[in-house]
Image (cartoon, rainbow, N blue to C red; front, side, top):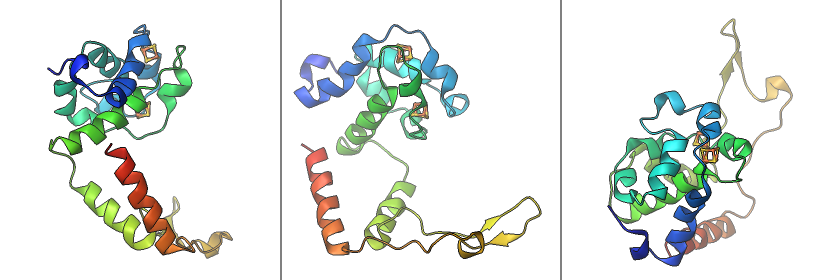
Length: 162
Ligand code: SF4
Ligand code: SF4
């Protein structure tokens, strides 16, 4: 267990969003990942309230969030379990906890293409294939200034480590 008093101001700011939680459960009832989570958003907020940071860092639950923001939309206290989850993901990587290695592939793709994933063919219910152009959608291109994009990305990553 890591006491909040031992966390930096920035760390407290993230974990501190949990301090307003009334445990009403509205976030968990709207969370699309809830059925896959060993810890639901309400429980994550509760554990953050109780300083159970190390337990959260070691949980797979922090990597299952789909980042849909439903918990933020539903919370009557304007708390975002999503923010707690993202903070915990960052902290887990910085502290050397295990994390899904597929994330490395996503990062490599962002660095190479400026996007997590390149456009792909889709199937309809009859398993008919469609390209974007078949649907009247324009081609998707990466950032016009790739060098500037990568500089910005590096800056964001450096600032998130502070
Ligand atoms: S942002 Fe994450 S925790 Fe919040 S409702 Fe969506 S999946 Fe659940
Ligand atoms: S909806 Fe908000 S107040 Fe209610 S349990 Fe979730 S985080 Fe806490």
